[in-house]
Image 1 (cartoon, rainbow, N blue to C red):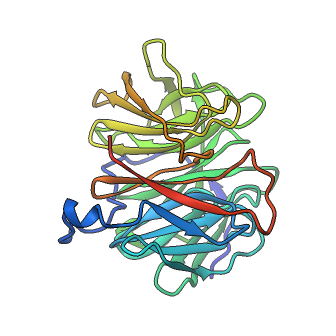
Image 2 (spheres, helix red, strand yellow):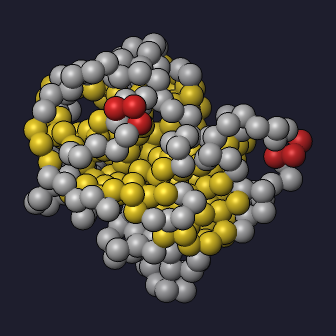
Length: 314
């Protein structure tokens, strides 16, 4: 396991397309998929937040309570804890085609890379030394990128040839995105053309494009916003944004259509469900989307039940 210090740097490479997190195409048909459980029960008291899917029909869900990782088989709904957490949060997460799980560490200000087969920690990175909230992560072909809801920066882990780096880089955010009270930069995704990143600001509901220098530009949503914006997922030019509803009790999965550069977007629809109970993030498998119910407005106890729910991809 590696522990490293942060090093300041600027964004030096052009972003490219995202590594698919839903695993290989495989042979699962839509007819087979309808037989998969629509809910994944989690251990009582687990306090889920982030989710990643793949390779294959497996979901990995992280615990805000202690950083443990639960692996669920989408075909049966059954699962087990494969990684016992360090006592600090596991928030946003993504898997790559090498079977590695990249995990944002929340208030610990760190990131971990976990082997999805064994649960072993392959590397650990201390991204921030002061107050921080490392909230979400996205993988591009050349790097892993982490948001910080407390500090106006992105953290970049370069992945040359897929190799885990010895150090991390800090990209200072400038431009339209300014930090205020509450949760700031949260969910993160690439732009459709792969030349930038998209970041949602939870406390304002605004969406921003982040350019190569870290300069941000507000995305024109034509009068719309993403209140309580949380996890993001891009498929083509369609962006799925989770509005967790923690302040307005109106949880939704919002579907947006973007231009290639990610500078202009329009809300197509909002999907609401009585099965949503403050969902936080979203991941895809075939024609389904899976959302963990974080239940932020429910007092957590060791006996509190939790789950992740599946919906048809809008």
